[in-house]
Image 1 (cartoon, rainbow, N blue to C red):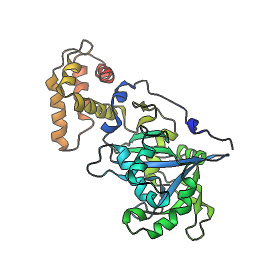
Image 2: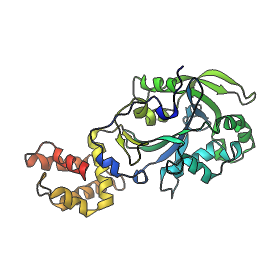
Image 3: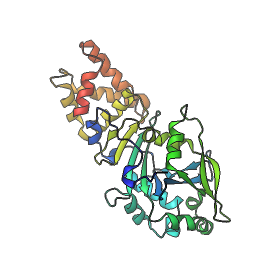
Image 4: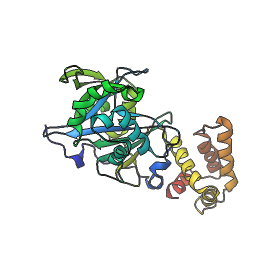
Length: 323
């Protein structure tokens, strides 16, 4: 196999025509619910990812990256991803990294180890951030020590994963891109390490469905919106309307009433009152209490646009994107 250079993983760059709004949204403002780390390493022949098997829960027996839900008080996905990676990979015992060192290792502001940060929004609006991180420096030490470290650990967090598997990067990409239907189960050939002998053997493993969902846009080379760093990519499986509403809310949270005044008194759109924007937000919040209805905002202004003989919301969208 042809060697894959770290800086040129086999994903072709692609961009949405509309990128300006997302470029303004910081990763810290992405309302994520979970975060993870997908470690990879390269040999002379190929690139591999390191996956781990879920020990408990409804997805027990499937293979995933290292990650989990956001804890209360965590304000940035790098904090959540580092904590989950440190716990599940037992990094203090396997490679001798404490939590802060783990965070520094994956943080794109502190090191060059992470090549991509994938911020994904599913069809249902669930948001996850995955750090795709070069693990060459520690991979041998980690693989050698994982099972002994797990055996010595007593905390639940350190025992959530019970197997280690190595999957060829190209095989993983092909398996995900070849998936016929959304959420279809995917099985893939992998080198699985036996916990008793510490030897690897080829097996067919089943990927955790959410791993496939959150990496689908990346591996399928789908359009994405660029973050402030070229490493950060925002993917969405939502419709354009849903995605637009989410971004509108992000802008509103930062600018408040000022954005409403800017949007709806512009020359391009005409004199929409700022109160209309606020009213739409209030309707959404009243309808679903804490959960925002992703369609009511768009439809509210779609009707206003049609009433004023504008094309369906296009002027609103344009201004949002350039705000």
